[in-house]
Image (cartoon, rainbow, N blue to C red; front, side, top):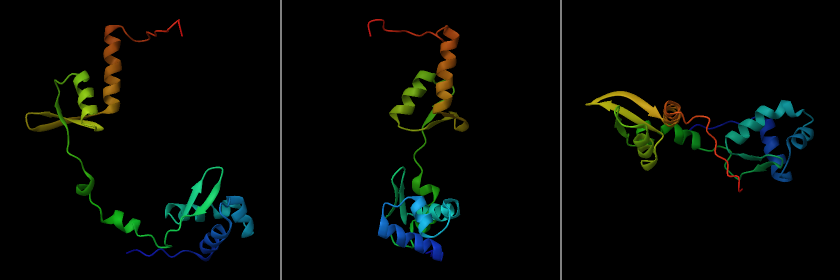
Length: 151
């Protein structure tokens, strides 16, 4: 396990937030007689490690987590095999319509294009969107807007 050694200033920030939550960045900096810019990196570290929680327009809260969270070690131990999903395959002859339907039915972000048993490409949601729009261009449907005059 990796133990994070916090600086004396970071420990002071944690104690101040515990006693005064929610505490704004200005309040924390003022309590330490520093500028907000000076403690910005400390606050970033404390929020990224999960020790503090930040809410916009509210301030910082103590999360209650241990000062040495093990989440980073857990992430370091994960492999791609632990999180990968099953690939979804299509052929280059698959229509854009069918590819879009497949993409959503399989709840995936991309489709792998194969020919026989060889991977020849990948198609993303963005690629399919561009392809669908380009296809309407060929049929003369672009820039057609329909307005409901009864609305």
